[in-house]
Image 1 (cartoon, rainbow, N blue to C red):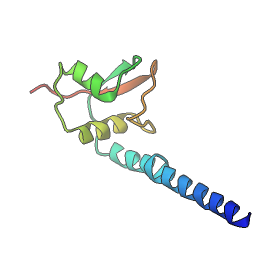
Image 2 (cartoon, rainbow, N blue to C red; image 1 turned 90 degrees about the vertical axis):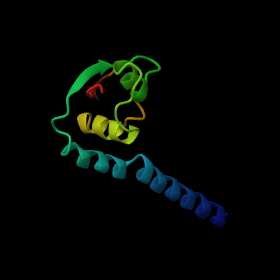
Image 3 (tube, rainbow, N blue to C red; image 1 turned 90 degrees about the horizontal axis):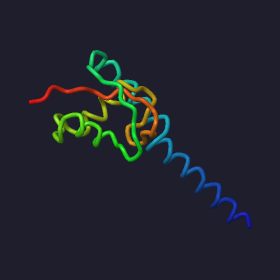
Length: 103
């Protein structure tokens, strides 16, 4: 019985540590650091519709062409929207979406 309880506790600790590394506090700190670099980035406020993703919004705004690498898009989005995960936009909420010059 003690072995089972010890195994469950160990599994819970591993799950919590994994969450912190992938989606938790460490991820948020990285997003805050990039905020200083892109303070003057132009943006447009857009209300997310059901089924929208950051990529689909940018492609719609840019007529199907992604003007920057996806990593840069995510970095710029998180600089404009501190404490928001670019991978989990919520329908009905308004976010600042970076604007890029069309080439």
